[in-house]
View 1 (spheres, helix red, strand yellow):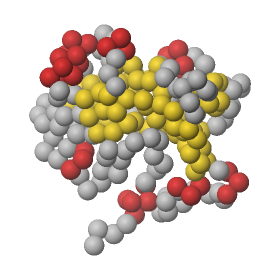
View 2: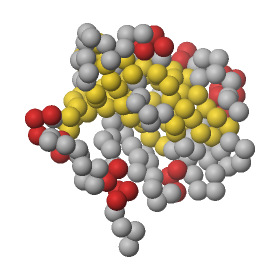
View 3: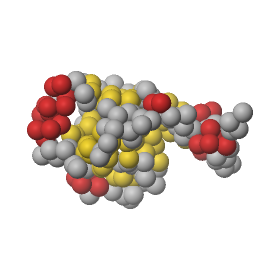
Length: 189
């Protein structure tokens, strides 16, 4: 069941759903707008011959932090990781979907490539997997409404919510976090 604005607000007021900082003006009929944070991760293409999913990629990324009055330019064909300003904490009975905004999609901006599902029990800032499909660059401004998150009530609370699973690679993440797919290949010894 998709939660309405009233249900979202009620869970926030009860402290069961945590959104920090929370701005009630960002609440829509069935979702909450999320704002763009100040940090970005870009790939250093001059040092990569290919990405190997078996190995960490941190050394091939460069972190860029900009001020609230600055902007980040995403060029045509470019892929960057960004972060939301909001830190969220979902209870073990609530999952979520993050979606791009149609106004930005009409500029050719993809907000998340495929990672739009947020498991029950997740806690942290959300990493945005952004691409520019346009033929011209697009300016990204910290604090701008970048995406929306919709909340889904589960039929029952999760037995093992996200933070309690061994495979919870991104629990309590802050800032944009590069792929940790390499952890899937490590032995469980």
